[in-house]
Image (cartoon, rainbow, N blue to C red; front, side, top):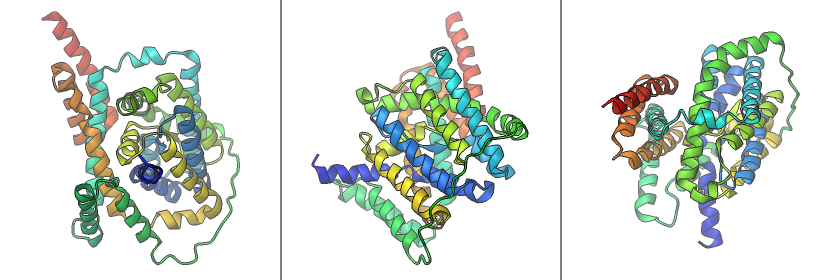
Length: 368
């Protein structure tokens, strides 16, 4: 692969997970009052440092359950940052106590594939909800995606789509000025820690351990093979733990790696850490030089294109299940977890159901 072609694919892979990163970040800034400079600056730093260590493009996403609850309840940034700090300390504790392998043993291949399948279905449903099939943007976007996939094999299929979105978001912008950030250290009080623990931290734990932890390790090794040799439950815990502590103290979003993000970047074109450097420096540039005005820029990105990107990634993430099609017990568990997640939009509930089902089936198979 020549240098120009490699750069093109790296660039496509860099921006292929914005369908998850941008909408949640925008909502946390607008509804919960997070500092946009801190959100983008620390997301960019997390991208660069984690991917430099792991040697692959490690995704950076806001913690889903925590963010969803905070957005729905319109909790203030202090409570959200307190919960993020608690999550960071919890993950560091897992790293220090060396219990990651013991926890990991509870997640069979069927359960992991079920988490991935369920997340894929949720992503597809979310993407569909964002797409207006009658809008010109949707029609143009589908045409660009299909045309590129069929006739421009030398290009990543989603790169022209992302470029179309960037051009659309820049069109008509006025009064977009450089605005250096005002970032402050936030030390939580006891009341914020208490609310953050019960309202946000506890509901997030299961999703973090399953999707951002176990499923992320599995997905990274599925795609990157030997290149992902540094990725394990312990190193992921340390990476996310450090990121959440610093991001939360400086007013950023609670963050994680995520299995869906691994698929997004890889299917977008990422094959090493270079894509992370591109998106990382882009986010740092937004955070440092545009500050609060960065929200004006990213909120103009067409929602229909974000929806199509999410559908695209959801499809590829859901078909990770294909390697267990001949393993009857694992397949049954995976399908049930996926179906429950799709019906309820609740991956945590689906996971608990799947864990119970796995041990019931395990007992029955042994008995018979």
